[in-house]
Image (tube, rainbow, N blue to C red):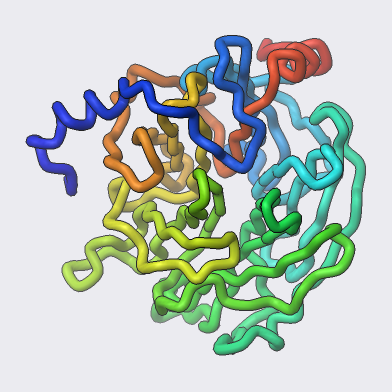
Length: 329
């Protein structure tokens, strides 16, 4: 592993510091009465919407008796942000189609289709699309600039039978901005560094912005960081972002999602060991680190959960979700 043993005492001390609560870009829930929602798909039902909830960010309960939340209507890698009007917005898209779909909800219980758009990939500077491909769109609402940043990955390489990884080596993270989710900027590349990246989410901590990325190159002696989770930071949500950090996760991890610890004094970063093996968890007192892996018996994610996002919710929202969907039967 990339973490040296001598750091352990410092990491433990850092976790229990009593500094000010973090600013997350989401409504934080620093009291014991806060909770979390995990919107995700499952191994058996890829691309559909399921809910799990937690009161501590570590132990998760599957809702709705293990059934879909939006039944046949929704497809995608679920990603949710609370927006400019206090409503929640959910992104999705059909696998390998170029359209991004947007859903809206006042309460996280009832969702309705809000709209859709297709980024014009050909207008992206310094990017030559090989396919009309939109992968795993993510949404972030930046309160200071009152704008949304929507990210996704598209490829500059066509898949070939002789080298399946070529398609993934060609992945670059693109983005658009919007004030209202009805009109959008032309797409741009999020990073100036020329590394294959996918599954990028953006979060704010204080006055810095952090892009949490999956390094999409295949691991090798020449590229040992391949298929790991890394972090890059910037002064604004669209960048410019510096080069990514050393790996936070082992190799063959993807779909990162981030939440503040209930007391607001540290972060939990979940990521999936694929294909659909399990979720791993790392923690740090700040997004700049230092990070370490949480022992697997300290947390519990539904065994079949796959790609999704976790967000803080209030105790009242938690109760409303339980009332609407109940627990797993």
